[in-house]
Amino acid sequence: DYDHDDYIFVGPSDDEFETDMAGWDELITVVRSPKICRSIKITSSTLTDNLWHVSRTFLSLAIGFGFFLSFMLCSAAYWSTINLKPVALGLLMTYFFQSMTFFFFDSGICREHDCKMSSGAASAVVASIFWFAAALGTIWMDVVYIQKNRRRERRERRRRRRERRRKRRREARAAF
Image (cartoon, rainbow, N blue to C red; front, top):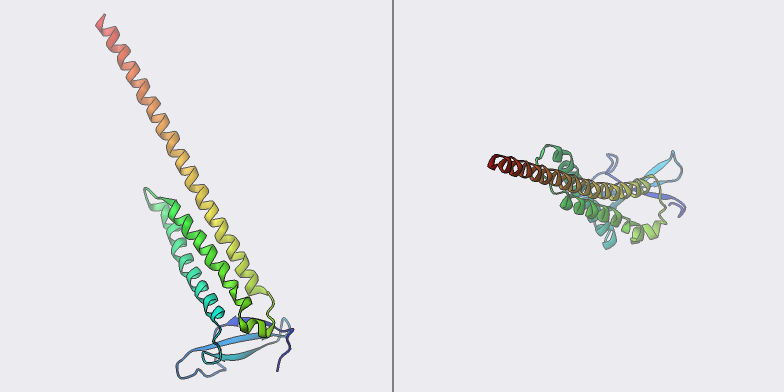
Protein backbone atom coordinates (compact mmCIF):
# COMPACT_ATOMS: atom_id res chain seq x y z
CA ASP A 1 0.00 0.00 0.00
CA TYR A 2 3.07 2.27 0.31
CA ASP A 3 6.50 2.49 -1.26
CA HIS A 4 9.75 1.69 0.50
CA ASP A 5 10.95 5.21 -0.40
CA ASP A 6 8.52 6.69 2.16
CA TYR A 7 9.72 8.26 5.37
CA ILE A 8 8.36 7.02 8.69
CA PHE A 9 7.82 9.15 11.77
CA VAL A 10 6.48 8.01 15.11
CA GLY A 11 3.59 10.15 16.23
CA PRO A 12 0.85 10.26 18.84
CA SER A 13 -2.63 8.83 18.27
CA ASP A 14 -4.98 10.60 15.89
CA ASP A 15 -8.69 11.08 16.45
CA GLU A 16 -9.45 9.50 13.10
CA PHE A 17 -8.62 6.01 14.44
CA GLU A 18 -10.52 4.27 17.16
CA THR A 19 -8.51 2.88 20.03
CA ASP A 20 -8.54 -0.81 20.82
CA MET A 21 -10.05 -2.19 24.02
CA ALA A 22 -6.81 -1.77 25.99
CA GLY A 23 -6.58 1.86 24.92
CA TRP A 24 -3.09 1.38 23.47
CA ASP A 25 -2.47 2.59 19.95
CA GLU A 26 0.59 3.58 18.00
CA LEU A 27 0.50 5.48 14.77
CA ILE A 28 3.25 5.53 12.23
CA THR A 29 3.01 8.48 9.87
CA VAL A 30 4.32 7.74 6.41
CA VAL A 31 5.35 10.90 4.61
CA ARG A 32 5.28 10.66 0.83
CA SER A 33 6.23 14.30 0.35
CA PRO A 34 6.73 17.21 2.69
CA LYS A 35 3.01 18.09 2.45
CA ILE A 36 1.18 14.75 2.16
CA CYS A 37 1.07 12.34 5.13
CA ARG A 38 -0.98 9.29 5.96
CA SER A 39 -1.08 7.22 9.12
CA ILE A 40 -0.82 3.48 9.56
CA LYS A 41 -2.34 2.00 12.69
CA ILE A 42 -0.03 -0.33 14.62
CA THR A 43 -1.39 -1.95 17.77
CA SER A 44 0.39 -3.78 20.54
CA SER A 45 -0.54 -7.13 19.00
CA THR A 46 1.17 -6.29 15.70
CA LEU A 47 4.25 -4.72 17.22
CA THR A 48 6.47 -7.19 19.07
CA ASP A 49 9.86 -5.69 18.23
CA ASN A 50 12.12 -5.48 21.29
CA LEU A 51 14.35 -2.75 19.86
CA TRP A 52 11.27 -0.59 19.38
CA HIS A 53 10.43 -0.94 23.06
CA VAL A 54 14.07 -0.41 24.12
CA SER A 55 14.18 2.78 22.05
CA ARG A 56 10.97 4.06 23.64
CA THR A 57 12.28 3.21 27.12
CA PHE A 58 15.49 5.15 26.51
CA LEU A 59 13.45 8.08 25.19
CA SER A 60 11.30 8.07 28.34
CA LEU A 61 14.41 7.95 30.53
CA ALA A 62 16.01 10.81 28.57
CA ILE A 63 12.90 12.96 28.95
CA GLY A 64 12.59 12.20 32.68
CA PHE A 65 16.26 12.78 33.45
CA GLY A 66 16.27 15.88 31.24
CA PHE A 67 13.39 17.57 33.04
CA PHE A 68 14.72 16.67 36.48
CA LEU A 69 18.28 17.83 35.77
CA SER A 70 17.12 21.00 34.02
CA PHE A 71 15.11 21.84 37.13
CA MET A 72 18.14 21.08 39.31
CA LEU A 73 20.37 23.41 37.29
CA CYS A 74 17.79 26.20 37.23
CA SER A 75 17.23 26.00 40.97
CA ALA A 76 20.97 25.71 41.72
CA ALA A 77 21.30 29.49 41.61
CA TYR A 78 19.33 29.69 44.88
CA TRP A 79 21.47 27.19 46.82
CA SER A 80 24.32 28.32 48.99
CA THR A 81 26.44 25.26 48.20
CA ILE A 82 26.15 22.82 45.35
CA ASN A 83 28.10 19.87 44.07
CA LEU A 84 27.76 19.93 40.30
CA LYS A 85 29.52 16.60 39.68
CA PRO A 86 26.35 14.49 40.14
CA VAL A 87 24.43 16.89 37.91
CA ALA A 88 27.11 16.61 35.20
CA LEU A 89 27.03 12.82 35.52
CA GLY A 90 23.24 12.90 35.19
CA LEU A 91 23.51 15.06 32.06
CA LEU A 92 25.97 12.59 30.56
CA MET A 93 23.50 9.80 31.34
CA THR A 94 20.75 11.85 29.66
CA TYR A 95 23.00 12.22 26.61
CA PHE A 96 23.52 8.44 26.61
CA PHE A 97 19.77 7.75 26.92
CA GLN A 98 18.93 10.25 24.17
CA SER A 99 21.52 8.64 21.90
CA MET A 100 20.12 5.18 22.55
CA THR A 101 16.76 6.20 21.11
CA PHE A 102 18.35 5.62 17.71
CA PHE A 103 17.88 1.88 18.28
CA PHE A 104 14.61 2.61 16.51
CA PHE A 105 16.45 2.67 13.18
CA ASP A 106 17.62 -0.90 13.73
CA SER A 107 14.18 -2.19 14.72
CA GLY A 108 12.24 -4.58 12.55
CA ILE A 109 9.51 -2.09 11.76
CA CYS A 110 12.06 0.44 10.57
CA ARG A 111 13.91 -2.14 8.48
CA GLU A 112 10.62 -3.26 6.97
CA HIS A 113 9.57 0.27 6.03
CA ASP A 114 13.07 1.53 5.09
CA CYS A 115 13.23 4.43 7.55
CA LYS A 116 15.18 7.55 6.76
CA MET A 117 16.33 10.36 9.02
CA SER A 118 14.11 13.38 8.91
CA SER A 119 13.24 16.32 11.16
CA GLY A 120 12.36 14.21 14.22
CA ALA A 121 15.60 12.23 14.09
CA ALA A 122 17.57 15.39 13.36
CA SER A 123 16.00 16.97 16.44
CA ALA A 124 17.07 13.94 18.49
CA VAL A 125 20.64 14.32 17.21
CA VAL A 126 20.61 18.01 18.14
CA ALA A 127 19.17 17.14 21.56
CA SER A 128 21.97 14.61 22.12
CA ILE A 129 24.57 17.22 21.21
CA PHE A 130 22.99 19.76 23.56
CA TRP A 131 22.83 17.26 26.46
CA PHE A 132 26.53 16.55 25.96
CA ALA A 133 27.33 20.28 25.75
CA ALA A 134 25.30 20.88 28.93
CA ALA A 135 27.31 18.17 30.72
CA LEU A 136 30.58 19.75 29.58
CA GLY A 137 29.35 23.18 30.60
CA THR A 138 28.35 21.91 34.03
CA ILE A 139 31.75 20.27 34.50
CA TRP A 140 33.38 23.56 33.47
CA MET A 141 31.20 25.48 35.95
CA ASP A 142 32.25 23.09 38.71
CA VAL A 143 35.94 23.51 37.84
CA VAL A 144 35.58 27.31 37.82
CA TYR A 145 33.72 27.18 41.15
CA ILE A 146 36.46 25.03 42.72
CA GLN A 147 39.19 27.36 41.42
CA LYS A 148 37.31 30.39 42.71
CA ASN A 149 37.01 28.80 46.17
CA ARG A 150 40.72 27.93 46.20
CA ARG A 151 41.65 31.51 45.29
CA ARG A 152 39.37 32.83 48.03
CA GLU A 153 40.91 30.42 50.57
CA ARG A 154 44.44 31.48 49.51
CA ARG A 155 43.56 35.15 49.90
CA GLU A 156 42.07 34.43 53.32
CA ARG A 157 45.21 32.51 54.42
CA ARG A 158 47.43 35.37 53.20
CA ARG A 159 45.30 37.91 55.05
CA ARG A 160 45.48 35.89 58.27
CA ARG A 161 49.27 35.49 57.87
CA ARG A 162 49.70 39.26 57.39
CA GLU A 163 47.57 39.93 60.47
CA ARG A 164 49.64 37.49 62.55
CA ARG A 165 52.91 39.16 61.37
CA ARG A 166 51.54 42.61 62.19
CA LYS A 167 50.44 41.40 65.59
CA ARG A 168 53.89 39.88 66.30
CA ARG A 169 55.60 43.13 65.20
CA ARG A 170 53.34 45.19 67.45
CA GLU A 171 54.04 42.83 70.37
CA ALA A 172 57.78 42.99 69.68
CA ARG A 173 57.70 46.81 69.59
CA ALA A 174 55.63 46.89 72.78
CA ALA A 175 58.13 44.57 74.53
CA PHE A 176 61.01 47.11 74.02
